[in-house]
Amino acid sequence: MVRKRTLVGVALSLVVPAVVLGSQLIIPHTFAPGVPIDPANLNANFYAVTSAVNTRLDLYGNGSAGALTTSNTTNWALAADLPAGLNFQFTDFTVPAGTTFRVPSGTVIRTTGNFTNAGTIIVGTSSLGGVFKLNPSSETAYFAPPSPGISLGVPCIGEYKTSLGSTSLVHGGCGGTGVSLAAAANTVRPGVAGGGGGAPSRGGALWGATNGGAGGGTFVVIAGGAVTNSGTIEAKGVSFGFGEGGAGGGGGGIVVLAARKGVANRGTITVRGGDGAMSTSVNSAGGGGGGGFFLRVGGSTSNSGVLDFAGGAGGATSGTISGTTRMAGGGGGACGGSGGRGGLISNNTPMAAEAGASGYGILRNLDPTTVF
Image (cartoon, rainbow, N blue to C red; front, side, top):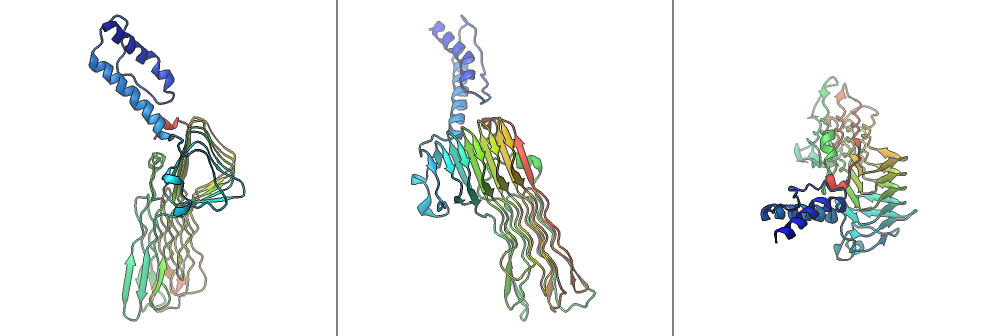
């Protein structure tokens, strides 16, 4: 019996590391021929092996949904278009050239084989922008703050004043605060929330309203084969929102592409922040949303295409502020980059709003099983 245990221990310590490739398997105990084995040590070795194998298999799914090629009308935001049994574990996944594939924020696709995009993938928005409604005659207001998404702080609404002289200053709202590069690099499972929403401003009409721009969504692909993008993947923040103007743009979204055999981008991937809204006769311009981030994980990666993680532009200004009640611009939402500050009002003149800061394009040349 001792001899049998010895052989099993030697096999585990020598053979399994070659089988479980790239999983950073660490055998806790190594046994020598002819030396009796402690059963607890043998069990610890088995536990290490099974954990490493299961982690590797689960990461890429089991391929039980088979191969899928999308059509030009495939929209996973619609229940009727979702895969049978809500099974998102494919063998191979293909978006053909000339087609558009729409997905909601939070989508995760796993393949045991390859993921290939030659068309256009549009990721839905996530975190909502703030809302501001005002009735100047009764001085009644309603305010709902923007959602933070993946950021360190929400943007601020602009200052609001009434019955001002021409020399009064009205200060713009601060932009949201973006996350650090280290935090972004470790956000491999972002969930549903992506870029943060932008702050609103006031509307010009009675009970007029503005909404800040919504943040860009999240999209994750984890492939046991290779990921190749020769088309377009968009997870952008919304440029301003609904209303007359002065609202901040939404923060850009998050795209994670991970593949055991490498990620090749020959197309365009954009996680750009949304632009701020322009000024009007009652409010200054909104700040631009901060850029999101794009994360490539794979032992071999290449890029000959376009990676756009820029912040959104600050809203344009024109004319003068003529309304008795007035409000400075709202700040832009954040994600990887911070949002821009909303424009202030000086001497009845709307001043320029700030652009959002750039996000990140991150490359991690590592086996995905060591990162997720």
